[in-house]
Image (cartoon, rainbow over the protein chains, first blue to last red):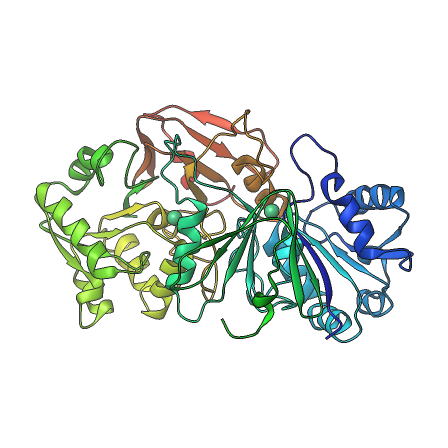
Length: 240
Length: 240
Ligand SMILES: [Ca+2]
Ligand SMILES: [Ca+2]
């Protein structure tokens, strides 16, 4: 499998600019062979403004950006893409637009069969996984399914947040939410990426990059913590 | 319209016990004529344990509890109910179970046509509204639609949380999430109930109870703040 993925928890880290905390990893990942990146701005309402933000930033890293939203034929744009970058925003809106435009299966094929590199951030990371069932977003629109592109056989929870022991708020903690997910049958692992962390996948190898630890939730098992640099290739085997 | 609703933001307030902060309002609302309450525990995984918690608490207020999950025929149980109480937990799980058991339309009919009093808490408040599109919960299961029981013609966001100016977390604030909802066309008002607040509806009258203010988000308009005791009857007219 030629799969190459860079799945980032968050596009902006507190105090930094857009993609600033992961720009080195994006550059290392895309390399010098890639000249143009196809950007998917569907997760935000103002797609033109979002494409401009991505274009301005990626230009400083040496890449030209085409927005799939500006293409006459989005499927053809994906088919021709050298690299794909799906930005964050609202995961429900993003997934619905991917299905509405017929892009889910063509992105899967391009990435898994043709080895086109895929960068996802936040919601763009959620949709790269097996489903959006562990997104943090509000369900503002109804997608035809929660099944996503399925580039990896597990779930990711981006922007993972540890419980605040001083909080007086009674809504579920993130950990409790993921535990509720695992109360459902046949639910896969959830890799919880704290802000500042990202997952690099190359074929059958996966490793954690960035500056923060990741937490792994497995149904019926103790959660585990993983340091930056950890080998997480075991997540890529299809059975949980 | 005979509708009588008590829609509570949260079942437990920090430092208090289950339903403690709203027990007076529950008692005032159900009154002395009601002897038995039909409890719907679908939002939590362990339905028997959840029914026990509700039963133990409501007994101290003078009500016996039947769990719809213990009924041979859930539709018949709703049809015979003197009062309905839907508890909180995961809103997606709750709504899916309501549809799976064929209860959405029968609850709507009992409440709107027969005047059976309805108490909802958290997820049980979300499903009482027009849709679950403003829940805070994780989409752990896929319901057949986000349309809900529709006892009121607007949305509620329970557990509303003001943005923390000191937070370094970059996930969307609650206000940003609701703004994303209102970027979608034809979206109704969202009444954001902070923890400690609840909405009382009697026929065509609605008022805010509890100890905290509520915030009202209307598409294309400024948000407004409403004190406990406010008359919110204008929300019940069908046009936004
Ligand atoms: Ca988001
Ligand atoms: Ca909840």
